[in-house]
Length: 539
View 1 (spheres, rainbow, N blue to C red):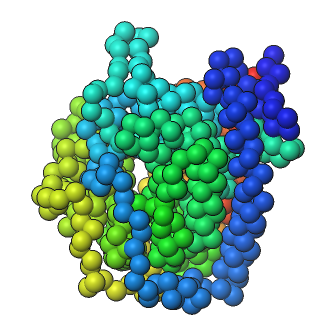
View 2: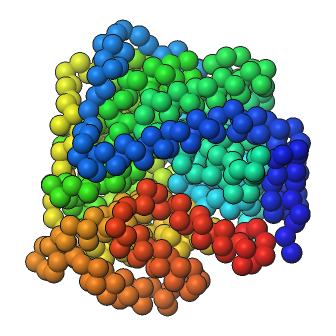
View 3: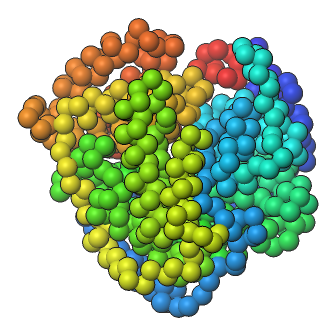
């Protein structure tokens, strides 16, 4: 039977489970309600503006370019407020979900910073969200521990740990379990608000601060909304202006044309930009992939040395360093391969080459998905970065045009790539529906961003009837056949056959739709809520 829920005036948490009251206090709910009432209308306006712009891009009546109306911002000399002391050196950052074991291992990993991820690496069940917030409260206060029930091993925080950063969900997501004045709350404001309410003062008292990664922004206007949220939160909590700091992920194609403007809007609160490479590839397909002259080849062939991605990465470095901000490199998705020394050596060599490229070009740090990659990334940056960062390297030699950012990656579309996308996409969605948002598959750490590439590539190839290298044309009927074959092969190893069939249906529907779904987590979340209702409880 469902819990009756927690309510505070016109604010209601439905399905709240026992033990959550210390997180969802009356005061916390009032704080969240204030954020929602102040900023949700503007959030909705910005999402409508996104949709309207996409219609124009699809129709060819608008082409992405650096905004003429903000040329003065790009041309002027200005800098962001300098980063706080504990964020000056960020040479290796690790990311992961918000369960206790992962948080402890990441904070103890030897990385410079850990991004606790409520977005691409977490399934947003209410249990996961509240448990994650509770874990972070204990981590901030140095009291987080975990005992593995199977092995009996106890995990606890070391004396020295990585700097904590938190990624809330994107502006497009809503939190179905928190209803404010009859409307679902913004998931961004929910995740941000709970963390900052419970931890901002404590973090500042400990010599750090409330630090965030902000995902999937598409414009300076969306950055300006975050600025207003930060200012309102600082005022409500009675903490100094500029205490809340953020790194913004440039992981959408439209945002790549407004990096200066995003830094400018957030200049009191920002510390840098990050090359969110996997979501960026997904965004390239989603944003301009309806045009037949922009067919993206197999995912494995789209690397950061592709001209468009290289241009994006270098422009980010140049832009950030001119403004005194950090330019963070992208995620290495590889994980150590046990039991196959040759395959492991090849994978680690790819990581080494990628991190050496980032350090050589001028990035101030990078991301890894597994602690085993930290020594490789550290060595790459230590070799060329004796100081805390490379912000002084202005890279004035770099020149990037709008056309450079929209070059089609070269390569082939193969049946192997098609089947790989189908296998990975369906297995990831199945795991997501079971509550796991970060999944090791075929020696790579997959999250929502990489699953987005899988399904948008298949959608694009089917839309344009792409001919596979040495093979058939991609049609709806071919997709149905191959999806059936791949799912049949996955059934024997599936944790839950119902989740696998749910994932198959969702993936297939997304790939066969006339219009591209903007984010797969939107229909996946609807299915997650249906599962909750069917079970009669919060998952």
